[in-house]
Image 1: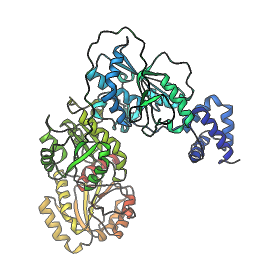
Image 2: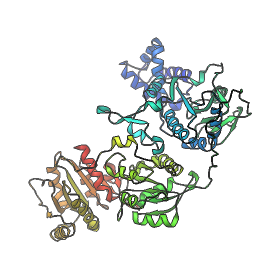
Image 3: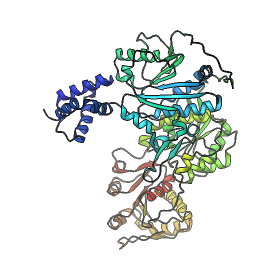
Image 4: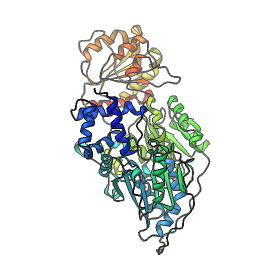
Length: 616
């Protein structure tokens, strides 16, 4: 049979299901074939029939590779934060009380489907912070287990790309991570001080020993794995886990995994959290004298967090209104489009938390923080297009009092940030009374100043119609104040007759010497040049002369379809489109298909400076 052998797929899927319990039926056939095809290529075999034979001959070794191949590893730090919040607000006092009754004074936790370790290290960061603040005499230990040995080894290593750690709220991030050096400088590794609390091993939760372990776990996390099992398998797994759960312990499953209606001897505590149905007294042990009484935690407020959103992009404000909804525990009580307006709104509305952009007119987010942050100001979470580690602006925002930072993605991917935004807003409010004494070593290690481009052959083209000249004027004035060392050209649609007067006027208002561009130049002028030209007259010669020089194209407002088509032909260029509400861009527009990003125009300069540094 050939590569797509139905018989081979069925046989291999059945073996994988028997090993892991993961149900691989007709709906998963395409995924199974795709992943097995890659494995066939890696092993230099001819087809899936040969792979099946290879699997049977090398079963002990290859079965582990097969498990890794066909099990899902999608997870991230602090996933489903409502579970962490429940533990902090409801379960923690009892966890501390039980731990203090033991000789080891330790809370025992098991992450039973830990994948590559993100859940384990999230729990470690979480408990390290909470116990340090509320019960420094109590310790914790976490076991992370997974059926996939490759994932277990990954977790033991504790190395992740730096972008994964950015999702972690700053109060929990602390100084638990170290940056790599040289070729691995984009990666971070969990520090030994945190890893010492964590242990990893491979376990199949469908095939746990029937003998009950001598150790009871106070918390068992088994999230987002039961969805791959049938009802009988779920019963088997949950009964095994409950046997290992302390009488006062909590079992946590994924938010989409309900255990009700299965006849299990459990009690729901809401939010996919369960306990034993009937409390059983724990065997008595000699109670050590308590060092510090467990504090009484305030009940969770049912009131939504009141949010003030500050951003000069109307589109971003609309997206935030869809993310910060009452059913998620938030209420947007007001908006502002500059730092000055934000100050008035904070005083008037008295919000619980503020989201703040960096690049805004009149007063930037950093300037606002410097002028207004105090102990009585509500916590602020930055939501900006400026990368947290790129340049001084993001770090200054944290130094001036911002509680946390979320990088603003493209509008197309912004909804994917909803979990992180919700998490960091809640965390900022919860930790508002304990300010950070300094920026974490993780942030400091990635800190680098924003500088001018260094190649000196970069080109920036501002493209717009006559109606956008005021914005172009503001951009040119900003570039002049920055001693912008990039060849910059303002290309206007349909304006050949007014170019001399326009150049004179802009030169006076911006302080820059702006020249009318030649229609057929022999070369592109060098660094620091400011030129103005008609788009349709200049674009052809410009295309021919550009060659491989780094190019950024800034589009203000909308353009005709013909102009869009000409700009879309530029390859290996940064193309930034202005974010306007209502949107002036349509998905079928030529530029939308090739654009680097859609963002407020006053972010263009910073984002292009970062782009030129990367290509340089």
